[in-house]
Image (cartoon, rainbow over all chains, first blue to last red; front, side, top):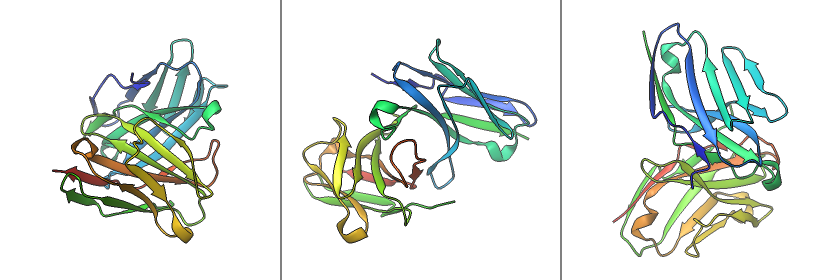
Length: 114
Length: 114
């Protein structure tokens, strides 16, 4: 089955608002969680990642929240801007595979309206 | 940031023929990966490669698939013979190290098997 799920295929947010992207996972062994942004050339690029020993990590306008008991993590983008418009992929990996196999969600298409 | 290139960007091929997808990884990277994304589905891990060897492969990596990186040139994915279900976007990635190292992705090769 699908190990990592993004339940919302799309999200529209007004400029200046908070974009909240959600991801659910199934495997208890996952201990590395990441968000990728797909750029216009279609290449996924790592935005931010977090290990399971923390439940929150901030980097500028980006914050990842991790809820291990709920098998859920999210990406919050504050002060959303039109240039944040893109497809966002969540991914998870496990130490027992050396983190070499990442499981990706299908993606959420974020549109930020000026 | 570091760039991974993929050649060609698009490929159309008749079922049963051979195809080779080329990846030019980040120059000092040592680990290489292929992922497959069928239209409307999530990106899925196929295989990782290090020091001239396949380290791990998924069930999607059929016997008709092979990978190599001869003499530090392109990292290639060869499919011989191709089947209709091989139609997908194939993403290459590379990382400097294995465990926990950031994977840098290329823009993908869109393969259509007729």
